[in-house]
Image (cartoon, rainbow, N blue to C red; front, top):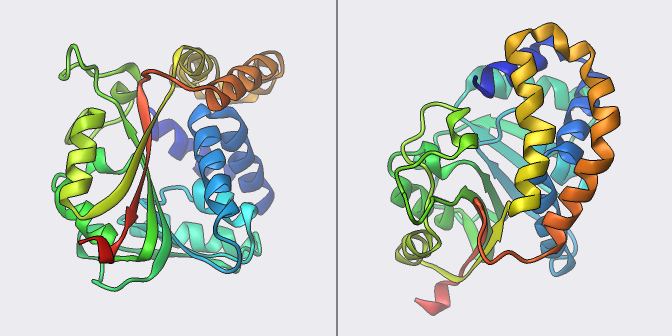
Length: 273
């Protein structure tokens, strides 16, 4: 059972429809526990960064996080960067139809980003696990930040008792170079790349994992068995959404001693070097 083929099938089903993508992006925003954590973190960042900001969505994929960012503040300038040229072109067509004129997608190799301080915030979600030279990635992202710019990084947390174990979520995707990081190893890599004020927040505690199984795992299992299930999923979500909403809220608004993922913030401070 794999995640990306199903998401791509859904995206192909929606096509270039503006209303279809609004529905898809909103569903991902409210259903996925991960998005709840990212949304809250961005709102917290926004509270201390009024006015116009330049933001990079690194590894933008379908564009759901670029859409979320543009909804939070339509005045932000947002660049979505991804290696998939077809996906980039598709996102640009869709976002023009959505009249999201503050968002632009570019084909970009993040390991070859210009050494130019451009962004106030860089969002990197499920990115570092797929880049072999993650040290160079972190350095390149740092160079792209303005002074006191912030990297907001979402990454999977390895099982400290069995670092080689792949969590269920990681088994749903391919082409990873690593299963994730420990908090200690990720902080070390970021410090070596020149970041400061590094903060790690554990996410996906017990309630988050239950929510993920209800909102993602079981629907994916049904869709993998028969894609036609997509037409009865609204009935499934009608009954499960109240529960997943509550679970997502609890997972987002309570602290965790540990979890199965991390939300990490790290700053560029040239004067601290």
